Image 1 (cartoon, one colour):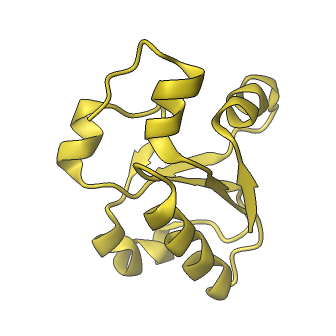
Image 2 (cartoon, rainbow, N blue to C red; image 1 turned 30 degrees about the vertical axis):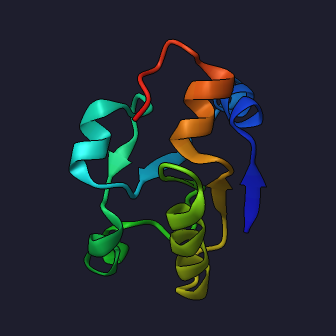
Image 3 (tube, rainbow, N blue to C red; image 1 turned 120 degrees about the vertical axis):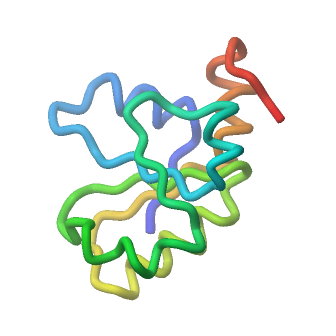
Amino acid sequence: MRELSTDDCKTYLEQATEKPLLLDVREPWEYRIVHLEESRLVPMREILQATGSLDPAQEIIVICHHGIRSRHIALYLENQGFTNVVNLSGGIDAWAHNTDRQMPTY
């Protein structure tokens, strides 16, 4: 599993010709407060049911609040045969504090 800082992730997303899936594993109430545009919400507790609808070959950047839940999900996906999984280090909180200070925090 790779890790990307929020600044590196932002740059990567701006330059990527093929966009990765931004998989947000937080709870719906967290997602309503703040999320990255074009991210897909699949709460951590629902990942087992959602795994079948994900493409194991697609690049997936997993996002949570601080990067802990997303790391667990990224490891889970790798164990399920997903080959291109990235954890957003520091999560949406680091994005809001370091990369886009206009974003709401909680």
